[in-house]
Image (spheres, rainbow, N blue to C red):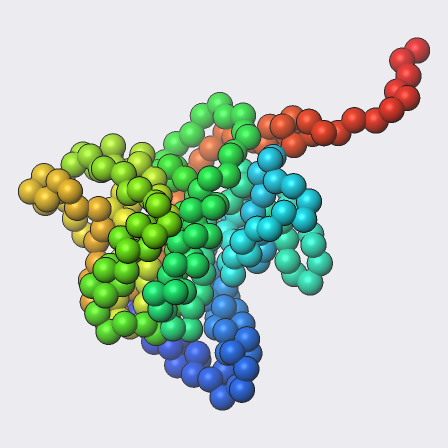
Length: 270
């Protein structure tokens, strides 16, 4: 039932994405396609999280500092956010679970931009107080790409990644052949790429997937999993997000680092 449902939505997304193609401006094509993905997420993910658009900050972020804007940000509802107006927000890194970049057509330059943004988001520093946790907790913010079109073969996309990493001096960590240890090692950039009705690629540190430890022991240097597939891509994407959001954390914001520059003159004590 779940796969059938997601496969039908995957086909529906492809069909509805053709409507804005009649527009004469690229922005008018891309924005509705982002909205289609956002609507899918809002209607399927647990209500413990919310969906937004904007940039991500930590306690070291400065006013006016150049930051990446993300098409979709999945964040915890019990944390504050900054309202910049026009539906654009500043999300505290402590609240962010995942980001999603939506592409009409995935190209190597588009992937490079997404990898840069992912690297920047993973460099932000969380300031939290934690007492307990249960369930799968991602080792870092997750960064995904969902594309409506792209190369016919996902091996092409896989071939782009090491070249982009080299050009950006991004080092890809070694991964243990033990699945539990792999899950605690974050991707240095992108976590997954899903091209609707064409295929998927993901960094092999996820709690679910198609590779087991025995295969990893035979291929100890492998880091990525990819497949050409006409269906199941949206389902895998949804399951990865579901795993990342279906946990319980006794964790809250430590706001002190955000207030280090907050000083006033003339305070009196009587």
